[in-house]
Length: 462
Ligand code: DHB
Image (cartoon, rainbow, N blue to C red; front, side, top):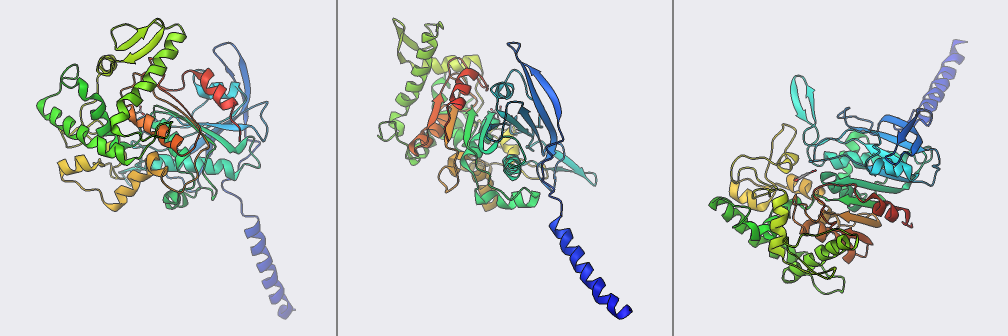
């Protein structure tokens, strides 16, 4: 009897084992039943009813439980084909939690328009976990975009059980969040992120998105100091009032911008080269359009801010006067605006912290500031800088969003106008449809003119 039992036991052990691997639970599976029914009252009084799926971990190996979750909201009218509006609340390159929809921004409006809504959290430069009494900064670059990509992969992984269509993800963010949206739109399936996503146990799926909405994206960080000083040089002797040392830094940075700009090889809409010699006129054309729309909508534009008007038409812009007006509404950053650390004092910007490491260090990330401080950019840091720059990804064989909506307020001084303008221009040069504007009298803000945004979204075709 015993002699027969052994082989039988062995067989059943093997069978049992293989059954176990077959039924191993999917740690990233979406539970369609784990929802609550909620409502949101919109400013106009409309009440929206939706299912709320909240606090869903989107990676298997959670590095920071405070941030690596997503919330998912499904209006009752949604089905499998409904596009998914993905709103990130990243600001200042800091960590952002998964939030609830707000009636006063694009998240609530997206639900009202019938879109499925996803609000993922993500780590940022300030996210910290304590291990054995030591602080670990878990969100240094590229952690924030890695988390958002992991969230996109989660949506794709569960596309068959989640309402909404993960092939129709529309991302939206403001400022550093606008940068995240631009990164999601420009770096789809980039192999650079693969090791980070693997380490987190993100779903093994694609992470490209369908459309990207970027409000005042703070991007091209390694070139933004030059762009800023080149643009605002005309205010240095006037309203900006720089010290002699600051003036020197400003001049050095400004003088480096033309060759960087020319190296981009951008073209105007008529196909002619957009070199630095044409840049002032090009910038003015967007500001003129913006002021003209404001006049057409009944706004009154003061006569002393450089907008030359004649019988309801904007004829020209006196740029130094206009930029002086911009700076009067909010003081400029001091040079260097982004990579400040150690150049004229110890001041550390969010960007210096972003590129630091797990110990909480801050580092220089531009060749200019490194030359001043004696710091260097090694290969690993260089790769992280590239990972955070949509302008870099646009030159790579990544999968790009098919549709772009980019806004930067006409009096937003957080980065130079050339930064969003060049993002939009590069995309247009590559053949992508881009809805781009510098909306009048808007500062550093996002999710405004939602009628414009949702008219655009509602009109998107695959
Ligand atoms: C943000 C603003 C900045 O001026 C900046 O340098 C980085 C981020 C922001 O609002 O997200």
